Length: 623
Image (cartoon, rainbow, N blue to C red):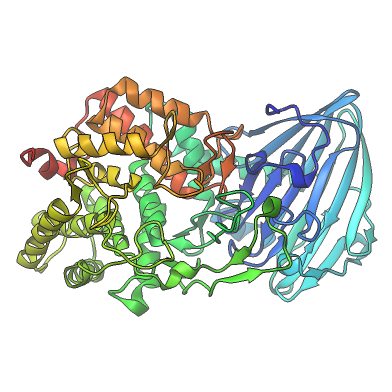
Protein backbone atom coordinates (compact mmCIF):
# COMPACT_ATOMS: atom_id res chain seq x y z
CA UNK A 1 0.00 0.00 0.00
CA UNK A 2 1.62 3.32 -1.04
CA UNK A 3 2.27 6.08 1.46
CA UNK A 4 -0.69 8.37 2.12
CA UNK A 5 -3.46 5.83 1.44
CA UNK A 6 -3.98 4.35 4.89
CA UNK A 7 -7.52 3.84 6.20
CA UNK A 8 -8.08 3.02 9.87
CA UNK A 9 -4.66 1.45 10.27
CA UNK A 10 -4.45 -0.71 13.39
CA UNK A 11 -1.37 -0.37 15.65
CA UNK A 12 -0.31 -3.97 15.01
CA UNK A 13 -0.25 -3.38 11.23
CA UNK A 14 2.10 -0.40 11.31
CA UNK A 15 5.43 -1.01 9.62
CA UNK A 16 8.64 0.36 11.11
CA UNK A 17 8.81 3.01 8.39
CA UNK A 18 5.25 4.12 9.25
CA UNK A 19 6.67 5.88 12.30
CA UNK A 20 8.09 9.35 12.68
CA UNK A 21 10.22 10.64 15.52
CA UNK A 22 10.07 13.70 17.75
CA UNK A 23 12.52 14.62 20.49
CA UNK A 24 14.19 17.30 22.57
CA UNK A 25 17.81 16.04 22.75
CA UNK A 26 17.03 14.21 25.98
CA UNK A 27 14.37 11.72 24.96
CA UNK A 28 12.44 10.69 21.87
CA UNK A 29 9.00 9.38 20.90
CA UNK A 30 7.78 7.39 17.89
CA UNK A 31 4.44 8.40 16.37
CA UNK A 32 2.70 6.31 13.73
CA UNK A 33 1.05 7.72 10.64
CA UNK A 34 -2.25 6.79 12.32
CA UNK A 35 -1.61 9.41 15.01
CA UNK A 36 -0.63 6.87 17.67
CA UNK A 37 2.33 7.61 19.94
CA UNK A 38 3.65 4.08 20.46
CA UNK A 39 7.09 4.58 22.01
CA UNK A 40 8.33 6.93 24.72
CA UNK A 41 11.04 6.53 27.36
CA UNK A 42 11.20 9.28 29.98
CA UNK A 43 13.08 11.17 31.28
CA UNK A 44 15.94 10.05 29.01
CA UNK A 45 16.53 7.77 26.03
CA UNK A 46 17.21 4.61 28.04
CA UNK A 47 14.62 5.12 30.79
CA UNK A 48 11.80 2.56 31.12
CA UNK A 49 9.10 3.11 28.51
CA UNK A 50 5.73 4.57 29.47
CA UNK A 51 4.40 3.84 25.96
CA UNK A 52 5.67 0.66 24.29
CA UNK A 53 2.86 -0.11 21.84
CA UNK A 54 5.38 -0.58 19.03
CA UNK A 55 6.55 -3.72 20.86
CA UNK A 56 3.14 -4.91 22.03
CA UNK A 57 -0.09 -3.24 20.89
CA UNK A 58 -2.10 -4.86 23.70
CA UNK A 59 0.12 -4.45 26.75
CA UNK A 60 2.62 -1.78 25.77
CA UNK A 61 0.45 1.34 25.98
CA UNK A 62 -0.21 4.09 23.45
CA UNK A 63 -1.58 7.61 22.99
CA UNK A 64 -3.65 7.94 19.85
CA UNK A 65 -5.32 10.95 18.26
CA UNK A 66 -7.04 10.18 14.94
CA UNK A 67 -10.32 10.72 13.07
CA UNK A 68 -13.27 8.46 13.75
CA UNK A 69 -14.21 8.44 10.05
CA UNK A 70 -12.10 6.65 7.40
CA UNK A 71 -9.08 8.72 6.44
CA UNK A 72 -5.85 8.84 4.52
CA UNK A 73 -2.74 10.59 5.77
CA UNK A 74 0.17 12.70 4.60
CA UNK A 75 3.13 13.59 6.78
CA UNK A 76 6.00 16.02 6.85
CA UNK A 77 8.42 17.77 9.15
CA UNK A 78 7.78 21.50 9.29
CA UNK A 79 10.66 22.98 7.31
CA UNK A 80 14.11 22.07 8.62
CA UNK A 81 12.89 21.04 12.07
CA UNK A 82 11.81 18.02 14.09
CA UNK A 83 8.19 19.20 14.42
CA UNK A 84 6.02 16.48 12.92
CA UNK A 85 2.81 17.24 11.03
CA UNK A 86 0.29 14.53 10.10
CA UNK A 87 -2.56 15.64 7.85
CA UNK A 88 -5.75 13.58 7.93
CA UNK A 89 -7.98 13.69 4.84
CA UNK A 90 -11.58 12.56 5.41
CA UNK A 91 -14.68 12.78 3.20
CA UNK A 92 -16.14 15.54 5.39
CA UNK A 93 -13.03 17.41 6.43
CA UNK A 94 -9.32 17.82 6.78
CA UNK A 95 -7.18 18.30 9.87
CA UNK A 96 -3.52 18.54 10.81
CA UNK A 97 -1.94 16.99 13.90
CA UNK A 98 1.24 18.71 15.11
CA UNK A 99 3.53 16.74 17.43
CA UNK A 100 6.68 17.94 19.16
CA UNK A 101 8.79 17.97 22.28
CA UNK A 102 9.26 21.69 22.98
CA UNK A 103 12.84 22.96 22.89
CA UNK A 104 14.17 26.45 23.52
CA UNK A 105 17.40 28.35 24.03
CA UNK A 106 19.09 28.33 27.43
CA UNK A 107 18.50 32.08 27.65
CA UNK A 108 14.75 31.60 27.15
CA UNK A 109 14.65 28.85 29.80
CA UNK A 110 16.41 31.11 32.29
CA UNK A 111 13.71 33.75 31.82
CA UNK A 112 10.64 31.49 31.64
CA UNK A 113 9.33 28.58 33.67
CA UNK A 114 9.23 25.50 31.43
CA UNK A 115 8.34 21.88 32.13
CA UNK A 116 11.25 19.50 32.61
CA UNK A 117 9.88 17.24 29.88
CA UNK A 118 6.85 17.75 27.66
CA UNK A 119 5.10 16.34 24.62
CA UNK A 120 2.75 18.81 22.98
CA UNK A 121 0.09 17.60 20.54
CA UNK A 122 -2.23 19.96 18.67
CA UNK A 123 -5.02 18.91 16.32
CA UNK A 124 -6.55 21.60 14.11
CA UNK A 125 -9.49 21.24 11.74
CA UNK A 126 -8.66 22.91 8.44
CA UNK A 127 -11.83 22.15 6.47
CA UNK A 128 -15.34 20.89 7.17
CA UNK A 129 -16.05 19.25 10.51
CA UNK A 130 -14.45 16.20 12.09
CA UNK A 131 -14.76 13.91 15.08
CA UNK A 132 -11.58 12.53 16.63
CA UNK A 133 -10.91 9.62 18.93
CA UNK A 134 -8.58 10.26 21.86
CA UNK A 135 -7.10 7.14 23.44
CA UNK A 136 -4.55 7.60 26.22
CA UNK A 137 -3.29 4.33 27.72
CA UNK A 138 -0.02 4.83 29.65
CA UNK A 139 1.79 1.74 30.89
CA UNK A 140 4.84 2.33 33.06
CA UNK A 141 7.95 0.13 33.18
CA UNK A 142 7.61 -1.27 29.66
CA UNK A 143 3.94 -2.11 30.04
CA UNK A 144 4.14 -3.83 33.42
CA UNK A 145 2.30 -1.17 35.41
CA UNK A 146 -1.09 0.43 34.84
CA UNK A 147 -0.97 3.96 36.18
CA UNK A 148 -3.72 5.33 38.38
CA UNK A 149 -5.03 8.52 36.79
CA UNK A 150 -6.32 11.14 39.20
CA UNK A 151 -8.53 14.10 38.31
CA UNK A 152 -6.99 17.31 39.67
CA UNK A 153 -9.56 19.82 38.44
CA UNK A 154 -8.04 22.77 36.59
CA UNK A 155 -4.56 21.28 36.93
CA UNK A 156 -5.44 18.36 34.67
CA UNK A 157 -4.88 14.64 35.19
CA UNK A 158 -2.07 13.31 37.35
CA UNK A 159 -0.23 9.96 37.26
CA UNK A 160 2.71 8.70 39.32
CA UNK A 161 5.24 5.94 39.05
CA UNK A 162 8.57 5.24 40.70
CA UNK A 163 10.30 7.65 38.33
CA UNK A 164 8.21 10.73 38.95
CA UNK A 165 4.92 12.44 38.21
CA UNK A 166 3.10 12.81 34.88
CA UNK A 167 0.51 15.48 34.08
CA UNK A 168 -1.93 15.35 31.18
CA UNK A 169 -3.46 18.72 30.39
CA UNK A 170 -5.72 19.78 27.54
CA UNK A 171 -7.77 22.61 26.12
CA UNK A 172 -10.93 20.45 26.27
CA UNK A 173 -12.45 18.37 29.08
CA UNK A 174 -10.96 14.94 29.70
CA UNK A 175 -11.98 12.37 32.29
CA UNK A 176 -10.11 9.23 33.34
CA UNK A 177 -11.66 5.87 32.64
CA UNK A 178 -9.87 3.28 34.75
CA UNK A 179 -6.20 3.32 33.77
CA UNK A 180 -6.78 5.29 30.60
CA UNK A 181 -8.48 8.31 29.09
CA UNK A 182 -10.89 7.84 26.19
CA UNK A 183 -12.82 10.65 24.59
CA UNK A 184 -14.27 11.99 21.35
CA UNK A 185 -13.40 15.50 20.28
CA UNK A 186 -15.51 17.46 17.77
CA UNK A 187 -13.91 20.23 15.75
CA UNK A 188 -15.16 22.58 13.01
CA UNK A 189 -13.01 24.41 10.47
CA UNK A 190 -10.64 26.80 12.27
CA UNK A 191 -10.98 25.12 15.67
CA UNK A 192 -8.18 23.31 17.45
CA UNK A 193 -7.55 21.17 20.51
CA UNK A 194 -4.29 20.97 22.44
CA UNK A 195 -2.92 18.23 24.67
CA UNK A 196 0.20 18.30 26.81
CA UNK A 197 1.87 15.43 28.64
CA UNK A 198 4.64 16.53 30.99
CA UNK A 199 6.92 14.74 33.40
CA UNK A 200 8.80 15.85 36.49
CA UNK A 201 11.18 13.71 38.52
CA UNK A 202 11.01 16.02 41.53
CA UNK A 203 8.41 18.47 42.89
CA UNK A 204 7.36 21.12 42.33
CA UNK A 205 6.39 20.48 38.71
CA UNK A 206 5.88 23.20 36.12
CA UNK A 207 2.52 22.59 34.42
CA UNK A 208 2.50 23.81 30.81
CA UNK A 209 -0.24 26.26 29.83
CA UNK A 210 -2.56 25.71 26.88
CA UNK A 211 -3.91 28.19 24.33
CA UNK A 212 -1.60 30.96 23.12
CA UNK A 213 1.18 29.78 25.45
CA UNK A 214 1.19 26.38 23.74
CA UNK A 215 1.25 27.99 20.31
CA UNK A 216 4.20 30.08 21.46
CA UNK A 217 6.07 26.89 22.48
CA UNK A 218 5.45 25.53 19.01
CA UNK A 219 6.85 28.69 17.38
CA UNK A 220 9.89 28.78 19.67
CA UNK A 221 10.68 25.11 19.03
CA UNK A 222 10.35 25.60 15.26
CA UNK A 223 12.70 28.57 15.35
CA UNK A 224 15.18 26.69 17.54
CA UNK A 225 15.44 23.72 15.16
CA UNK A 226 15.58 25.91 12.06
CA UNK A 227 18.38 28.03 13.53
CA UNK A 228 20.33 24.88 14.29
CA UNK A 229 19.80 23.46 10.79
CA UNK A 230 20.76 26.83 9.29
CA UNK A 231 24.24 26.55 10.81
CA UNK A 232 25.12 23.59 8.59
CA UNK A 233 28.07 24.38 6.34
CA UNK A 234 26.99 22.31 3.37
CA UNK A 235 25.91 23.60 -0.02
CA UNK A 236 26.37 20.44 -2.06
CA UNK A 237 23.91 18.08 -3.76
CA UNK A 238 21.22 16.24 -1.82
CA UNK A 239 21.13 19.00 0.78
CA UNK A 240 17.62 18.12 1.95
CA UNK A 241 18.67 14.55 2.74
CA UNK A 242 21.87 15.70 4.44
CA UNK A 243 20.11 18.24 6.66
CA UNK A 244 17.33 15.83 7.59
CA UNK A 245 19.96 13.27 8.59
CA UNK A 246 21.83 15.92 10.59
CA UNK A 247 18.60 16.83 12.39
CA UNK A 248 18.14 13.19 13.36
CA UNK A 249 21.71 13.01 14.67
CA UNK A 250 21.14 16.16 16.71
CA UNK A 251 17.89 14.76 18.10
CA UNK A 252 19.79 11.62 19.21
CA UNK A 253 22.39 13.69 21.05
CA UNK A 254 21.82 13.79 24.81
CA UNK A 255 22.24 17.52 25.45
CA UNK A 256 23.09 17.45 29.19
CA UNK A 257 26.19 15.30 28.58
CA UNK A 258 27.03 15.36 24.86
CA UNK A 259 26.61 11.59 24.42
CA UNK A 260 25.21 10.45 21.09
CA UNK A 261 22.71 7.57 21.11
CA UNK A 262 22.88 4.83 18.46
CA UNK A 263 19.07 4.76 18.16
CA UNK A 264 16.04 5.68 20.30
CA UNK A 265 14.53 2.18 20.36
CA UNK A 266 15.08 -1.37 21.51
CA UNK A 267 14.23 -4.71 19.93
CA UNK A 268 12.91 -3.62 16.55
CA UNK A 269 13.90 -6.76 14.65
CA UNK A 270 16.58 -7.26 12.03
CA UNK A 271 14.55 -10.27 10.87
CA UNK A 272 10.78 -10.28 11.43
CA UNK A 273 9.77 -13.03 13.85
CA UNK A 274 13.38 -13.82 14.75
CA UNK A 275 15.49 -13.15 17.83
CA UNK A 276 17.85 -10.53 16.34
CA UNK A 277 16.44 -7.86 18.61
CA UNK A 278 18.81 -5.57 20.50
CA UNK A 279 18.71 -2.50 22.70
CA UNK A 280 20.42 0.45 20.96
CA UNK A 281 19.48 3.24 23.42
CA UNK A 282 23.08 3.79 24.46
CA UNK A 283 26.17 5.56 23.25
CA UNK A 284 28.44 3.25 21.26
CA UNK A 285 31.86 4.89 21.03
CA UNK A 286 32.11 3.72 17.43
CA UNK A 287 28.78 5.13 16.28
CA UNK A 288 29.22 8.31 18.28
CA UNK A 289 32.75 8.91 16.99
CA UNK A 290 31.58 8.56 13.40
CA UNK A 291 28.65 10.86 14.15
CA UNK A 292 31.03 13.35 15.73
CA UNK A 293 33.21 13.35 12.61
CA UNK A 294 30.14 14.05 10.46
CA UNK A 295 29.02 16.93 12.68
CA UNK A 296 32.50 18.43 12.45
CA UNK A 297 32.34 18.13 8.68
CA UNK A 298 29.08 20.09 8.69
CA UNK A 299 30.50 22.79 10.96
CA UNK A 300 28.81 21.83 14.23
CA UNK A 301 31.73 22.53 16.56
CA UNK A 302 29.69 22.84 19.76
CA UNK A 303 28.26 19.33 19.45
CA UNK A 304 31.62 17.87 18.45
CA UNK A 305 33.42 19.49 21.38
CA UNK A 306 30.66 18.40 23.78
CA UNK A 307 31.08 14.79 22.67
CA UNK A 308 34.87 14.93 23.02
CA UNK A 309 34.47 16.28 26.57
CA UNK A 310 31.89 13.60 27.38
CA UNK A 311 34.13 10.89 25.99
CA UNK A 312 37.10 11.99 28.10
CA UNK A 313 34.95 11.98 31.25
CA UNK A 314 33.13 8.73 30.47
CA UNK A 315 36.31 6.76 29.79
CA UNK A 316 38.24 8.14 32.77
CA UNK A 317 37.52 5.25 35.14
CA UNK A 318 38.83 2.58 32.77
CA UNK A 319 41.48 4.66 30.97
CA UNK A 320 43.17 3.71 28.70
CA UNK A 321 40.84 0.78 28.19
CA UNK A 322 37.63 1.76 26.43
CA UNK A 323 34.24 0.22 26.96
CA UNK A 324 32.14 -0.43 23.88
CA UNK A 325 29.00 1.40 24.97
CA UNK A 326 27.91 3.74 27.73
CA UNK A 327 24.74 5.25 29.11
CA UNK A 328 23.96 8.90 28.40
CA UNK A 329 25.76 9.83 31.62
CA UNK A 330 28.88 7.81 30.81
CA UNK A 331 28.12 4.80 33.00
CA UNK A 332 28.42 1.16 32.02
CA UNK A 333 25.35 0.00 30.10
CA UNK A 334 23.02 -2.26 32.09
CA UNK A 335 23.22 -6.04 31.94
CA UNK A 336 21.15 -7.47 29.11
CA UNK A 337 17.84 -9.05 30.10
CA UNK A 338 14.60 -10.09 28.43
CA UNK A 339 11.09 -8.70 28.93
CA UNK A 340 9.01 -11.85 28.60
CA UNK A 341 5.67 -10.08 29.06
CA UNK A 342 5.97 -8.21 25.73
CA UNK A 343 5.12 -10.01 22.49
CA UNK A 344 7.60 -7.99 20.43
CA UNK A 345 7.16 -6.11 17.18
CA UNK A 346 5.05 -8.39 14.95
CA UNK A 347 5.84 -11.31 17.23
CA UNK A 348 9.62 -10.80 17.13
CA UNK A 349 10.80 -12.05 20.49
CA UNK A 350 12.53 -11.71 22.82
CA UNK A 351 12.30 -8.04 23.71
CA UNK A 352 15.62 -7.06 25.29
CA UNK A 353 16.82 -4.18 27.43
CA UNK A 354 20.46 -3.63 28.26
CA UNK A 355 23.11 -4.94 25.88
CA UNK A 356 25.52 -7.85 26.22
CA UNK A 357 28.06 -6.14 23.95
CA UNK A 358 29.10 -4.10 26.98
CA UNK A 359 31.47 -6.94 27.96
CA UNK A 360 33.03 -7.44 24.53
CA UNK A 361 36.46 -6.48 23.23
CA UNK A 362 36.18 -4.43 20.04
CA UNK A 363 39.57 -3.01 19.18
CA UNK A 364 38.30 -0.87 16.32
CA UNK A 365 36.84 1.67 18.76
CA UNK A 366 40.33 2.96 19.53
CA UNK A 367 40.86 3.98 15.94
CA UNK A 368 37.43 5.53 15.60
CA UNK A 369 37.81 7.56 18.78
CA UNK A 370 41.32 8.76 17.89
CA UNK A 371 40.30 9.55 14.31
CA UNK A 372 37.29 11.52 15.52
CA UNK A 373 39.48 13.49 17.91
CA UNK A 374 42.10 14.05 15.22
CA UNK A 375 39.54 15.81 13.05
CA UNK A 376 39.70 18.74 15.48
CA UNK A 377 43.38 19.24 14.66
CA UNK A 378 42.81 18.62 10.96
CA UNK A 379 40.22 21.44 11.16
CA UNK A 380 42.69 23.77 12.87
CA UNK A 381 41.82 23.30 16.55
CA UNK A 382 44.19 22.42 19.39
CA UNK A 383 44.14 20.00 22.35
CA UNK A 384 44.86 20.77 25.98
CA UNK A 385 47.52 18.74 27.77
CA UNK A 386 45.02 16.39 29.40
CA UNK A 387 43.51 15.49 26.03
CA UNK A 388 46.93 15.02 24.50
CA UNK A 389 47.89 12.58 27.26
CA UNK A 390 44.63 10.66 26.87
CA UNK A 391 45.20 10.25 23.12
CA UNK A 392 48.82 9.14 23.62
CA UNK A 393 47.79 6.60 26.25
CA UNK A 394 45.15 5.20 23.90
CA UNK A 395 47.88 4.81 21.29
CA UNK A 396 50.09 2.95 23.74
CA UNK A 397 47.19 0.62 24.55
CA UNK A 398 46.86 -0.12 20.83
CA UNK A 399 50.55 -1.01 20.52
CA UNK A 400 50.14 -3.50 23.37
CA UNK A 401 46.86 -5.07 22.27
CA UNK A 402 46.37 -4.86 18.49
CA UNK A 403 47.33 -8.52 17.96
CA UNK A 404 44.54 -9.81 20.22
CA UNK A 405 41.47 -11.43 18.65
CA UNK A 406 38.24 -9.56 19.37
CA UNK A 407 34.51 -9.57 18.68
CA UNK A 408 34.82 -6.85 16.03
CA UNK A 409 32.49 -4.24 14.59
CA UNK A 410 29.43 -6.51 14.20
CA UNK A 411 29.48 -7.85 17.78
CA UNK A 412 29.01 -11.59 17.17
CA UNK A 413 28.33 -13.73 20.20
CA UNK A 414 30.15 -16.87 19.09
CA UNK A 415 33.68 -15.97 20.08
CA UNK A 416 36.60 -13.82 19.01
CA UNK A 417 38.63 -13.71 15.82
CA UNK A 418 41.40 -11.66 14.23
CA UNK A 419 39.14 -9.23 12.37
CA UNK A 420 40.56 -7.26 9.47
CA UNK A 421 38.46 -4.20 10.26
CA UNK A 422 39.70 -4.16 13.86
CA UNK A 423 43.32 -4.31 12.64
CA UNK A 424 42.59 -1.56 10.13
CA UNK A 425 41.37 0.74 12.89
CA UNK A 426 44.38 -0.08 15.06
CA UNK A 427 46.51 1.03 12.10
CA UNK A 428 44.32 4.14 11.81
CA UNK A 429 44.80 5.00 15.48
CA UNK A 430 48.58 4.96 15.16
CA UNK A 431 48.54 6.69 11.79
CA UNK A 432 46.49 9.61 13.10
CA UNK A 433 48.59 9.96 16.23
CA UNK A 434 51.75 10.18 14.12
CA UNK A 435 50.19 12.85 11.94
CA UNK A 436 49.07 14.78 15.03
CA UNK A 437 52.56 14.56 16.51
CA UNK A 438 54.23 15.70 13.30
CA UNK A 439 52.00 18.74 12.99
CA UNK A 440 52.56 19.66 16.65
CA UNK A 441 49.02 18.92 17.82
CA UNK A 442 50.28 16.49 20.49
CA UNK A 443 53.59 16.66 22.32
CA UNK A 444 55.87 14.00 23.79
CA UNK A 445 54.31 11.18 21.81
CA UNK A 446 56.49 8.07 21.39
CA UNK A 447 56.68 8.50 17.62
CA UNK A 448 59.17 5.69 17.02
CA UNK A 449 56.97 3.24 18.92
CA UNK A 450 53.84 4.32 17.05
CA UNK A 451 55.61 4.22 13.67
CA UNK A 452 57.02 0.75 14.35
CA UNK A 453 53.63 -0.71 15.26
CA UNK A 454 51.83 1.10 12.46
CA UNK A 455 54.11 -0.65 9.98
CA UNK A 456 53.72 -3.97 11.82
CA UNK A 457 49.92 -3.72 11.60
CA UNK A 458 50.12 -2.84 7.91
CA UNK A 459 52.30 -5.86 7.14
CA UNK A 460 50.03 -8.05 9.25
CA UNK A 461 46.95 -7.00 7.25
CA UNK A 462 48.67 -7.26 3.89
CA UNK A 463 49.99 -10.75 4.63
CA UNK A 464 47.14 -12.31 6.61
CA UNK A 465 43.93 -10.57 5.54
CA UNK A 466 44.50 -11.07 1.81
CA UNK A 467 43.03 -14.19 0.20
CA UNK A 468 44.79 -14.89 -3.06
CA UNK A 469 42.21 -17.36 -4.37
CA UNK A 470 39.38 -14.89 -3.79
CA UNK A 471 41.44 -11.95 -4.98
CA UNK A 472 40.10 -10.03 -2.00
CA UNK A 473 40.68 -9.02 1.57
CA UNK A 474 38.56 -11.10 3.95
CA UNK A 475 36.63 -10.50 7.14
CA UNK A 476 39.01 -12.30 9.47
CA UNK A 477 42.33 -14.10 9.23
CA UNK A 478 42.33 -17.73 8.15
CA UNK A 479 38.81 -17.63 6.71
CA UNK A 480 37.27 -16.84 3.33
CA UNK A 481 34.31 -14.77 4.53
CA UNK A 482 33.68 -11.33 3.10
CA UNK A 483 32.55 -8.25 4.99
CA UNK A 484 31.28 -4.91 3.67
CA UNK A 485 33.39 -3.10 6.28
CA UNK A 486 36.40 -3.93 4.09
CA UNK A 487 35.33 -0.99 1.92
CA UNK A 488 36.56 1.20 4.77
CA UNK A 489 40.15 0.31 3.86
CA UNK A 490 39.80 3.19 1.42
CA UNK A 491 37.98 5.59 3.73
CA UNK A 492 40.69 5.39 6.38
CA UNK A 493 43.49 5.70 3.85
CA UNK A 494 44.98 2.21 4.03
CA UNK A 495 44.33 1.49 0.34
CA UNK A 496 43.53 3.83 -2.53
CA UNK A 497 40.12 3.11 -4.05
CA UNK A 498 41.60 2.21 -7.44
CA UNK A 499 44.44 0.08 -6.07
CA UNK A 500 44.41 -3.48 -7.49
CA UNK A 501 43.70 -5.10 -4.15
CA UNK A 502 40.80 -2.75 -3.42
CA UNK A 503 39.38 -3.25 -6.90
CA UNK A 504 39.52 -7.01 -6.34
CA UNK A 505 37.92 -6.67 -2.92
CA UNK A 506 35.11 -4.58 -4.34
CA UNK A 507 34.44 -7.12 -7.10
CA UNK A 508 34.25 -9.91 -4.52
CA UNK A 509 31.92 -7.92 -2.25
CA UNK A 510 29.75 -7.02 -5.22
CA UNK A 511 29.57 -10.68 -6.21
CA UNK A 512 28.94 -12.18 -2.76
CA UNK A 513 27.19 -9.52 -0.68
CA UNK A 514 25.04 -7.69 -3.22
CA UNK A 515 21.43 -7.65 -1.95
CA UNK A 516 19.96 -5.70 -4.86
CA UNK A 517 20.66 -2.49 -6.77
CA UNK A 518 22.69 -0.26 -4.40
CA UNK A 519 22.10 -2.61 -1.42
CA UNK A 520 24.71 -4.65 0.42
CA UNK A 521 24.55 -7.23 3.17
CA UNK A 522 27.19 -6.61 5.82
CA UNK A 523 28.15 -10.32 5.65
CA UNK A 524 26.47 -13.57 4.74
CA UNK A 525 23.93 -15.09 7.11
CA UNK A 526 21.47 -17.95 6.78
CA UNK A 527 18.67 -17.09 6.59
CA UNK A 528 19.71 -13.65 5.32
CA UNK A 529 19.00 -10.57 7.38
CA UNK A 530 18.22 -7.23 5.77
CA UNK A 531 20.65 -5.23 3.69
CA UNK A 532 22.69 -3.10 6.09
CA UNK A 533 22.07 0.63 5.77
CA UNK A 534 25.51 2.08 6.42
CA UNK A 535 27.22 -0.65 4.37
CA UNK A 536 25.08 0.27 1.39
CA UNK A 537 26.13 3.91 1.76
CA UNK A 538 29.76 2.75 2.09
CA UNK A 539 29.27 1.18 -1.34
CA UNK A 540 28.16 4.50 -2.85
CA UNK A 541 30.97 6.32 -1.09
CA UNK A 542 33.62 3.89 -2.29
CA UNK A 543 32.52 4.63 -5.84
CA UNK A 544 32.74 8.37 -5.15
CA UNK A 545 36.21 8.01 -3.66
CA UNK A 546 37.56 6.65 -6.94
CA UNK A 547 36.35 3.06 -7.03
CA UNK A 548 33.95 3.96 -9.82
CA UNK A 549 32.62 6.90 -11.79
CA UNK A 550 30.77 9.88 -10.39
CA UNK A 551 27.65 8.79 -12.25
CA UNK A 552 27.86 5.34 -10.66
CA UNK A 553 28.17 6.89 -7.23
CA UNK A 554 25.21 9.20 -7.83
CA UNK A 555 23.05 6.39 -9.18
CA UNK A 556 23.79 4.18 -6.18
CA UNK A 557 23.21 7.01 -3.72
CA UNK A 558 19.91 8.08 -5.27
CA UNK A 559 18.62 4.51 -5.20
CA UNK A 560 19.44 4.37 -1.51
CA UNK A 561 17.56 7.61 -0.91
CA UNK A 562 14.45 5.93 -2.31
CA UNK A 563 14.44 3.61 0.73
CA UNK A 564 13.91 6.48 3.15
CA UNK A 565 10.38 6.77 4.46
CA UNK A 566 8.20 9.73 3.56
CA UNK A 567 9.84 11.72 6.37
CA UNK A 568 13.40 11.01 5.23
CA UNK A 569 14.16 8.48 7.99
CA UNK A 570 16.17 5.26 7.72
CA UNK A 571 16.43 2.23 9.97
CA UNK A 572 19.41 -0.01 10.60
CA UNK A 573 18.55 -2.36 7.72
CA UNK A 574 16.41 -2.60 4.58
CA UNK A 575 14.48 -5.65 3.41
CA UNK A 576 15.85 -6.22 -0.12
CA UNK A 577 12.62 -7.81 -1.33
CA UNK A 578 10.07 -5.31 -0.01
CA UNK A 579 12.13 -2.21 0.74
CA UNK A 580 10.72 -2.15 4.26
CA UNK A 581 12.73 -0.85 7.20
CA UNK A 582 14.23 -3.38 9.62
CA UNK A 583 16.00 -2.97 12.94
CA UNK A 584 16.04 -0.07 15.34
CA UNK A 585 14.71 3.19 13.99
CA UNK A 586 15.85 5.74 13.11
CA UNK A 587 19.46 4.60 13.19
CA UNK A 588 22.29 7.11 13.64
CA UNK A 589 24.78 4.79 11.90
CA UNK A 590 22.75 4.78 8.67
CA UNK A 591 22.26 8.54 8.62
CA UNK A 592 26.00 9.02 9.22
CA UNK A 593 26.64 6.88 6.13
CA UNK A 594 24.22 9.00 4.11
CA UNK A 595 25.94 12.27 5.03
CA UNK A 596 29.45 10.93 4.41
CA UNK A 597 28.47 9.56 1.00
CA UNK A 598 26.82 12.85 0.00
CA UNK A 599 29.92 14.82 1.05
CA UNK A 600 32.21 12.48 -0.91
CA UNK A 601 30.03 12.80 -4.02
CA UNK A 602 30.11 16.58 -3.66
CA UNK A 603 33.89 16.63 -3.29
CA UNK A 604 34.32 14.36 -6.33
CA UNK A 605 32.05 16.63 -8.36
CA UNK A 606 33.95 19.75 -7.30
CA UNK A 607 37.29 18.14 -8.01
CA UNK A 608 38.46 18.72 -4.48
CA UNK A 609 41.23 16.62 -3.02
CA UNK A 610 39.30 14.22 -0.85
CA UNK A 611 40.31 13.11 2.62
CA UNK A 612 43.50 15.18 2.84
CA UNK A 613 44.92 13.19 5.78
CA UNK A 614 45.21 10.09 3.62
CA UNK A 615 48.06 11.05 1.35
CA UNK A 616 50.00 7.94 2.34
CA UNK A 617 47.49 5.54 0.81
CA UNK A 618 47.67 7.26 -2.56
CA UNK A 619 51.47 7.34 -2.46
CA UNK A 620 52.03 3.66 -1.75
CA UNK A 621 53.00 1.54 -4.75
CA UNK A 622 50.34 -0.79 -6.14
CA UNK A 623 50.78 -4.44 -5.23
